[in-house]
Image (cartoon, rainbow, N blue to C red; front, side, top):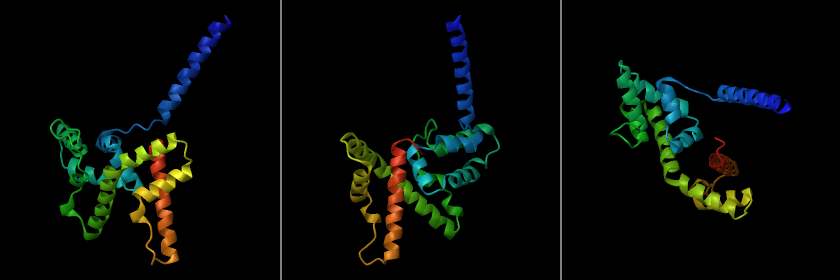
Length: 189
């Protein structure tokens, strides 16, 4: 009798927990949701680093998906934009930007974001591998941060002729980037 009641209670708790988890899960629908949810992981990290993911979703939707009326065409355009269409399997961030219709200011902003997408695409896997090896070898987080900065982020460090204010700003920026990368490696972004 006690076992039976425990099983019922356990089952009720499992249902309650799974309902809470479903409520916590953010399910997005529609084409914007598809862009948001299926953006390649590394590109997603780069966009989040630049705090421009929603901006990219809106831009890609307005310029490449919204222009179609038919749902099948919209679905196909979304899949092409994401690089998951049947015959278009490569995601190219620069092709998801409508470069011809940008103002000079917007073009500069998207070029900066594009350069970060390129940087993350090129370097992320190597930095993550170094992080995992360093962590497995027992190094503490501060040592790992210093290694990442020296091996991967040196160009972002200030020059010797920079003012103290510039140096502090650049060191803070690099430190935030390393913290962001570590959060990505650990699945916290």
